[in-house]
Length: 438
Image (cartoon, rainbow, N blue to C red; front, side, top):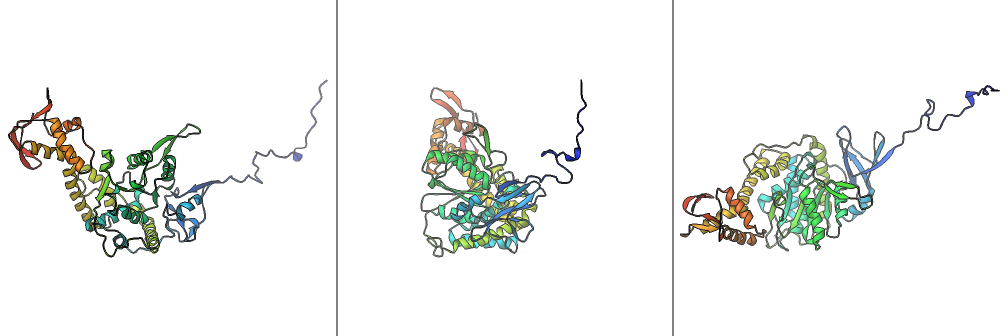
């Protein structure tokens, strides 16, 4: 015999814990996230600043005071306090607050005086280096940026130039030889500033090979370094795009990386009387004062910085790419003219030192007598003698043969190897030499 269920007084039932009620909705869980620099949804820039006592906070574009944290939706962003050791040991250079700088021209002139006071630089390079440093403070407005490289033997001032320039660059990050590959990739991905690396610090070729991977991939957006997580075996992408200041003794094996550099070849010379042999204690304060002004410049100008290609189309393609980001931060036509004139001179030097230019000179030397033919190997031998003298890696005969074909020669296979014909006079590199087009 069935019985009816006993009625239940619903007023005495407690609501389920996971069921929201109108009277007492559950608080939305706030997610905390550590950041160094970022943009809010509306495009506002947020940068880490560090007080003289080492307190980390955020400074928001358009605000007058620092903030300990910033809430955006369900996320609370906090400064990355774990970088305090990096700041203390001067591995990473942060500003302390945005300071007034006057005009962009005044700021560039002040940077010029700062660099000039601590390092020897050719006069025409001073303005270009200043433009490069200024560009680092807006590099994330571009899809490709060049590298600044100081190339020379020990004792020629490379390391001093690296120290001085990185000290006023955007989040200048010193990469030393005791860093491991995974730490290198994670540090660059986290800070996303200006990497400064001295090749002399890297005695181990395996460690330098990790730096080389960063240099090969870090020129443009969308080419991260990919590694496998050793614990989960999942692939991980590390953002390595950004400006880089490099000090090296040798040129890069990778020709693409080589052409991405603005390269100043340093020479051994007597140090100018006004330059201190050791950086004084006041150096850090001077550099900090400039970083503070550069932070204000970033806030004021970031949204208006765009690539400007006027005047760059007549240059070599790579020079135009190098110059585009620097031209974008040039404050007026005078500075743009300085840059374009500099890049034109760079093109002239690059053409002389290019493999094609060296092949032309080898052809001129071989055609000076009464010979009518030359082996491709002979051309390669003359080219490589010049390349080794300039610190370049030698070219293979196959590579030289390809260059000869691009110059309208047709190497023919013989028992003595591939041979080209040298017969009638034509213009090679602006001068008449006895060659014949195969």
